Image (cartoon, rainbow, N blue to C red; front, side, top):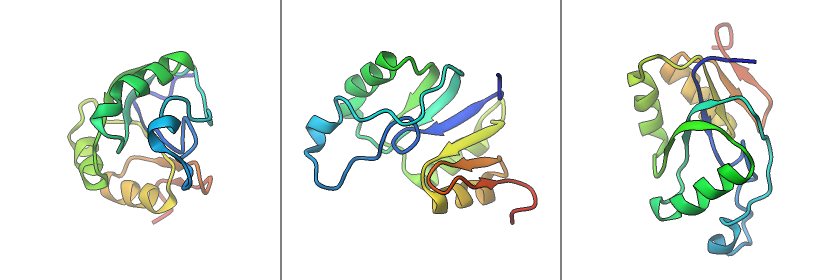
Length: 126
């Protein structure tokens, strides 16, 4: 299956979100897998700090997540700007948080699937 150019959030999509009561520096080494796909992902975005790039890349490789680029330390508003500037234009976005998914759809007009709410934001959902 090929969905075209896919952009995806990392935590909450491919792996669990960091639990509240956790030592982050330990959790980051092996978060529990959530949605693992063999479908290539164009761009994975995450708010994780750049200092965790090595652990993040190792985790993605361990679980066979294929991607072209990993953008770290990107805040939410910058994600919308990045998507709007991308060429080729993304076909779909995977997002973990429902309010972010809704805002991504409204800000980019790229269909967005929310993993937390299982909602799809696209034409007709304004």
